[in-house]
Length: 245
Image (cartoon, rainbow, N blue to C red; front, side, top):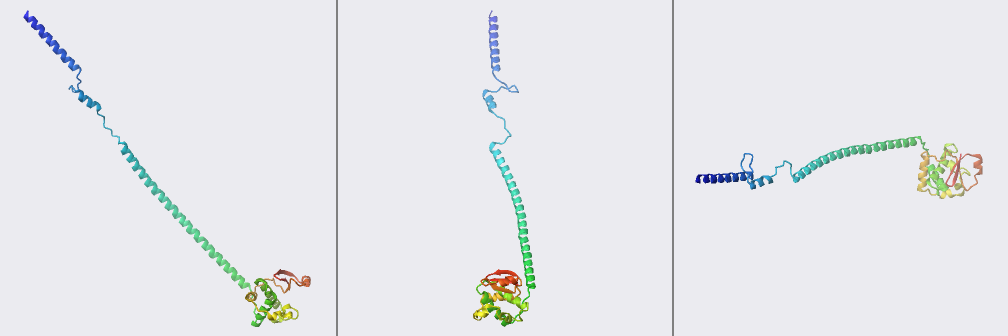
C-alpha cells in the first residue's frame, strides 16, 4: 500500500516538473542557433537600423554647390574667351575703317591739288608795267571802290580784256581814252586811293581770272545803257554795273 502511494506521488511530481518546463520553453524565443534571447536583447535588435550608403543632405548640398561653382567657372571662362575674340574682331574692323578714310582723304586732297594746279596752269597772267598797275588800281577804286571784291575784279577784267583785244597798247591808253571812263572826266580818278581790297582784286585780275566772260564794256546800272543793249551782247550784271561784249 505504501509503495503504491509513493509511486503516485513521484508520478505527480514528475508530471508537474515536465509541464513547467514546457511552459517556460514555449515563451522563451531562441536565436538561429537555438540559444534563448532575452527581452532586452530582442528590443535592441529591433531598434537597430541598417547603415545606408546614401550621403547626408548636407553632403549632397556641398556636392551640388561644388558642381555649380565648377560649371560657373567654366561658363565664365567660355564667355571671357568669346568676349576677347569679339573685341579683337571689332578692333581689327575699327582699324580698317579708320585707315580707309585716311586713304580717301589723301586721295581727295591729291585730286583737289591737281585740279587747282590745272586751273592755275590754264590761267594766262597779264604782263603790265608798274605804272599801268597803279593806274588800274586807281580806276578800279574810282569805279567800284564801294563794291565787294568780286565786283572790283570784274571792272579790272574789262580793262584788261580791252588791253588784250588791242584797244590800246597799255592800260594808260585805255583808261585815258576820251570819254571812256567817267571818273577820269569828272576828276574823281585823281583823288582815288586804292584800298587793300582793290589791290587784291587787281592782283586776281592780272593773274588771269576773268569773271566777266570776256566782256569789253561795263556801264552803271543807273545810266542809260540802251545803246549797249541794242549794239552789244549782254553778259550779266553784278553790283552797280551791267557787262557787255
